[in-house]
Amino acid sequence: MAKVLLVDDEQTLLQALTYNLKKEGYEVVSAADGIQAVATARSEQPDVIVLDLMLPGLSGLEVCRTIRSESTVPILMLTARSDEMDRVLGLELGADEYVIKPVGLRELLARIKAMLRRTQMAAPHFASPGPGPQEIVEAGPLKMNAASREAIWNGKELDLRPKEFDLLFYLAQNHGRVLTRASLLEGVWGYDYVGDARTVDVHIRWIREKLEREPSKPRYIQTLRGTGYKLAL
Image (cartoon, rainbow, N blue to C red; front, side):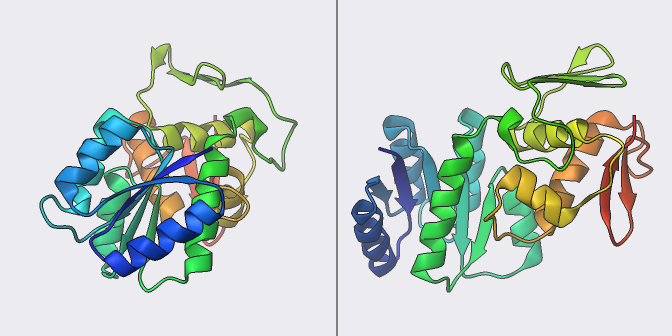
């Protein structure tokens, strides 16, 4: 039974989500402020966290930053604010998805289920338009092991966040191929992921900062304007 941590000070939404998630067979724990959220995440070790941005005590961004420094648990950030900078900041702090309120209960449940499914999928099982799944992928100076979650670049281990590893592994599986943002969303985030393409762009930028000598003039992860990305090694 998967455990979901719901963090929101809006009691109506909290109760509705709790009821429906339990009805679907999930174990649910909740918190109504930022400080309680961090403490509950540490003590309960949830499988996924639904985190509101606007919280008393600590903000959702601070909660996300703290939890991400300690855990790779999937985090879905929920907010009534539609500012793009908030969305980018949430992703940069480690949120896996960013959902703007109001959101239908059915859609939110679908997103939670999708995130839980993705955590159960090892990187080599991702659907791929290229060759069959591999546990170890080598391309030029890059060597990646899906089982140990190790990525070696020019003989040195890369410090990658979980989703950065998944994305780079997928690109390496298909190195030399042009992959659209839609195919990357499908292959890395799951076929039913309903986030926007900005998620891909943000993660590509992070990876470039770790691979490229000049991230603003990328050599290894190339952008094909209007199409997508290609790993060229």
